[in-house]
Image (cartoon, rainbow over all chains, first blue to last red):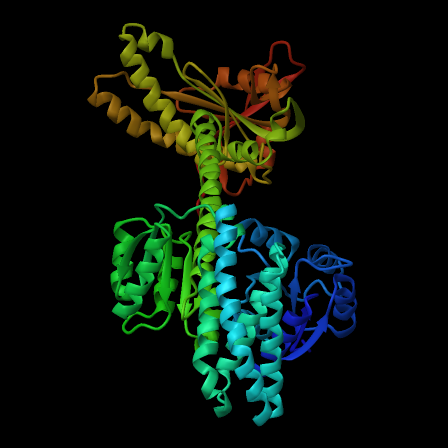
Length: 126
Length: 481
């Protein structure tokens, strides 16, 4: 039932393109959104298996979008991996408190990110 | 802070210079290679240009700078992953860019945010477990750079014996090892009462993801993939240690609570049954004054002619005699589910059926009284050895309604029983003979007559109470009944 689609939410065009390419090469189906509000719409409509959420987004920030997603029963169970620009412990905690399942800092350690995605997609399917 | 921003920028300038120098070559490659590769190469060129304009255009917005760095790094790594032969001429240069950027991002000081965010790991003791000496060496170096106190074990067996000897803050555990593997070490840590809270981070290759999931299910705190990234390593260790600290705090708090509970138990446990202690501990609001009307069986016992017996004994002998007797009786009463309301010299007032309700409180009380009387033989044997007087106890039982609850003032209250039936019990006790168990009509009606055998009834004239009291001595238990 659970989808193996990854929803990538990233406003920076070049990073969105880069991550989309790399995730697609890794065999994943990737959907993208460029702000928090459209990310929420996409989560509700497409029920992705996991969300990669940049936390500094226009319209609705990643923090707000995550909080909204976690209080919406139709999408609350979808794991969200926060992508933050800072290797700050405070941000990590903030992401966890916001309801994110995990986090990665930019620049992304791609193999680590991939293993997390697999972990969450795997957990969904068992 | 300013120094580190400058340092970071200088690194990026170097990288963007490297990149710009490579741009013509990359562009020329796109002309004779697959469309897909051409597209990827184009993307890297755009990213390099973005980075160079972010660096040279005087942009100080860290977010934009990082995004540009992330893109160049990502595209470079992606190209390096590709096996396309067309890339061979630029492979080394792309590798140079990618690794320069990883180094930049992996040196905590080079990113402004990290330098102030992460508390240092100075002094944290870390056990690294890996069967390969080169891995142990690499990890030790990385961790020593973070000022950690590193100890290493080259087998699961070694790790377990080290953990038994000295405490550490966190364990980095290789998944695949001969003999006792990482999963087994983890399982043993999590099965050990002392070690359970110790954070364990599993280290493994990408191909072992299934095992990692399994490890997380049995209690691993986190995991890292090889080759280990030092920023991630630092962050994971820190969060592991933080979790452990929270846990320790929780543990401390729990210990305090336990101490308090023990104190209550020790203070009250000698006088009241475990049932009341439980009730007090479970609902402190139960300590408020007030009570319930409860049907209970009351017990009153005393040593006949006690005052006369001990008249000539020195005080410490009297205390020894009383403690031996009351200690034994307390054990028996609590064992039968009774609640001791009061010791009055050699006399004991106890009740069955409160605070915890019981359908058999009368039978419990009679059984208890029988055991108390039988115990007197042992007590008297010990008394004889110590040259102390021979004691004879009388017990009265009576069943009826009393007010049970916390009685007294705000400053001093105790769980106890009050009511007319307490006086009735006392009146019966007055008339009980040495070594006798005398029960009221109400108690007799509440017990199973096939089990307990009673002697001829006696009638007591109860002064100040209406009518006469009919009482019966218990003379035996029919065990076959």
